[in-house]
Length: 459
Ligand code: ARG
Image 1 (cartoon, rainbow, N blue to C red):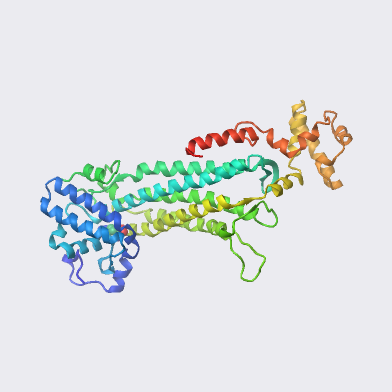
Image 2 (cartoon, helix red, strand yellow):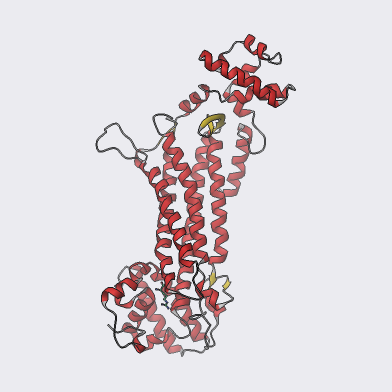
């Protein structure tokens, strides 16, 4: 089959070679963006007097017909035409005749493909932003129900100090807030037009790049034509922001997996997000959380792949850059899917308030309270730490907890101890007293919740 660029060729490649080089199997995902970019380009060509109005009308009509068909999924693409750009151009020429061949005046596939991806990512990043908000809202509404639900807080996965469950959930809301900021700041760079940069050097036609940028809703243009066609930073940045987001989701996924185990029993995931075992009838597996934890790996992989593709590439466009697409598409799909699943999982999870609270009473996570108690009465904290450490050791030897020790034992350890230590040892008191800024005290958590809700503009 004759290529659209076949002029200087005397023979055509074999089909299997074409297949290897083609991007149409995956870049057809860009079909709508490709046609939108072409519509803006041809409109500008008409306005600038580069193409006569009647040609512009024919081309636009043809493109609009193709757009309708694309939306209905009726276009049939061919590997013989390599990529989405040439496929659409070929279909246009088949439909309206040789005038369709005027569309490509003053542009190249190099600025065209870059334009398509800017348009594509802009749309998807906006969708991701609203899904992040959705997940934050789900976490906030669980947090609102659980300000006074207490649980062990961990460091090194060892029980450390008791905390409010809402406080734990809100930590993720803030992590997601940084993701939100990163994605929304990246829009500034995504929203620049490379269109009209040509193959690499601009064009001799009197085009108006600002006009096409305006028609496509871009905030401005790339100022350097070489940079415009060879920049993939905006995709790498997207993959990097996505990696960070997935890392956050993966951490929460890991906690849900732990918490829903027999060992913790802090939460129960809804049946809709769990699966059974084909052999063990008692099992309920947190599959969706595990899968999201697992999918984080492929997103990191896509980031590393594109960084490696771009490393050492001379300016400007190189075919290597066609490798930017599959990882980007897969990341978009993975991130969007993970956020949707996660939101449902959080909204429907059942929190086992009693099990959480019970866990705070069967450990030494109130030991800091005792040390703080002595320090507040003037003993240097380092000494207080030592005194309490010995009491903990004593408890371990006796097989009891701190709250079980009689006052005499405390008095013996330090005359500063009075009977109000038993209140200080109560985990609920311990949580509630931590009202330093950003702490887990109930009043502080309520204040943070109000701040978060104002920021999210909801509830
Ligand atoms: N299919 C190509 C890609 O995805 C489009 C740009 C091709 N440009 C070129 N000069 N071969 O990168």
